[in-house]
Amino acid sequence: MATTPRRRAPTPAPASPWAGSEERQRQRQAKRNAVLTTAAQLFNERGFHATSLDDIAARLHVTKPTLYYYVKNKDEILLACVSKGLDMTLAGIEASRAAGGNVVDQLRACMQVYADIVMQPFGMCLIRVGDEEVPEPARSELRRLKSEIDLAFRRLVAQGVQEGSLNPCDPKMTAFVIAGALSWIGRWYQPEGAYSSAEIATQCINTLLAGVVRQPG
Amino acid sequence: MATTPRRRAPTPAPASPWAGSEERQRQRQAKRNAVLTTAAQLFNERGFHATSLDDIAARLHVTKPTLYYYVKNKDEILLACVSKGLDMTLAGIEASRAAGGNVVDQLRACMQVYADIVMQPFGMCLIRVGDEEVPEPARSELRRLKSEIDLAFRRLVAQGVQEGSLNPCDPKMTAFVIAGALSWIGRWYQPEGAYSSAEIATQCINTLLAGVVRQPG
Image (tube, rainbow over the protein chains, first blue to last red):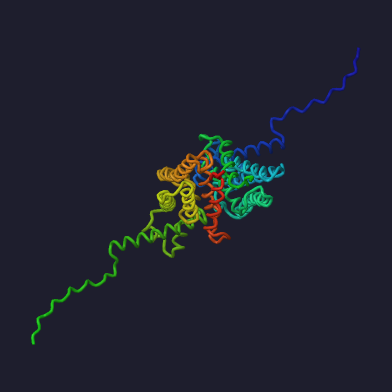
């Protein structure tokens, strides 16, 4: 008996061994990120000037020419690392403020964000690298972004002084003290040290807050 | 009438236009100091790596060969600048402690010494230059001396906690907060800025002490 041939479902195209353009873009970004993170770690360990592209390539088990597919040169890498540290900080501060709560809660949350970030490779890079090491015009842009961190702390302190939850003070100087003590963590923090990053953040923040939060009575 | 010839006082030797060896040594030291101070200022303004011996010579209105009479090379200059900053700090801390007084007075005096020094060229150099930029074996020696500053603060804090004049805390972390906030002044201080160095020191120290000194009652 003759059967009517069934209409076949269209055969799916064989999976291509080449990634699609979106996936390729994603992989490329992940690899660039790996280059930047490794570079930041090396800059923090040895200093920017003592680190070569060869060092970065060696730690990633690739050749220097491979690196050039993801980054332009050492200056561009440094700028990208410091920018990432800044972006993370500003985004974290923005999120802490957006989460609301009273001024002291917001200040504590912003301090927590900043302390966490300076103990990570990009944040450590941000505070270890002097602005003067970054060539213009990137230097001015970095200074502008860094001053936004200071301004965020300054605004919170001013708000707290005004509402009476913080001790009377010059918000600019107090913001410098807060940001300075937290930044300095990135200079001495050793991941394999005796204190965890969480312990360090908590203790430093408590000591600083004890000096600025107004005690009732 | 014949007079007996008077015994003449011995004629003093004519003043030599060449300085004596002691004076020569003094002049040489003063000139080496000028080289180091100028170098420290340039390192602080432009960064160590971006500063050349030619830049230093130009600011002193001398030629580069003249510099080599006083210093060996840029690495030696950096080491000398950082060492001077360290020596000044350790001597100042020692003097503050030797002056006696209660723990809070001593702590305040040490903080004042350190704040003053990080706003001067050698002290600023000390805190701006990462240890990793100084070649071994000098690097290990500098780290040892830097940790003495930390230890001095730590000992005072521990003493204050023990006698009850400071809030209970981990002296190591509190010393890091104090030294960190004060060190950071050397990163943002501008001599021509809106605040005098004395105002900055006083405000930062008061904010920090408010967080550590135990309030009565």
